[in-house]
Length: 104
Image (cartoon, rainbow, N blue to C red; front, side, top):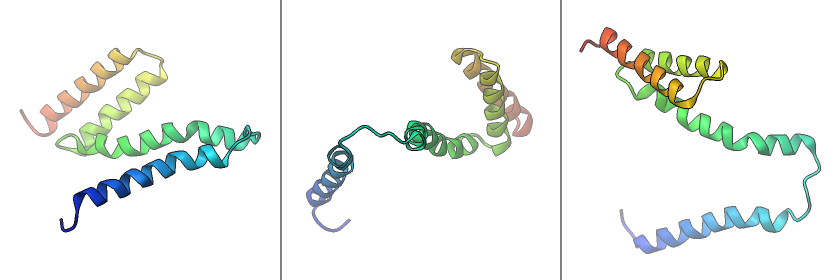
């Protein structure tokens, strides 16, 4: 890494500040478009999903056990089960499949 580290940090801070400050200064009034409101409402959820899903598949020895844990979590969440129950069941499914597929 050549160059001054402090310059990189300052540039990153300015860019981060501008990204957060510009919407506040450019959009003064209330957003009236229903489409835009609903789009902006779901952006954080979609972003988190897109960042998390690839790691679910690559966190285990085989992608199949990660996918099975994900499907288990989705099914139990759809059935409106609690967070702890969903997490424990998903981990148990991954654990058992890792034992079967990879060997323990």
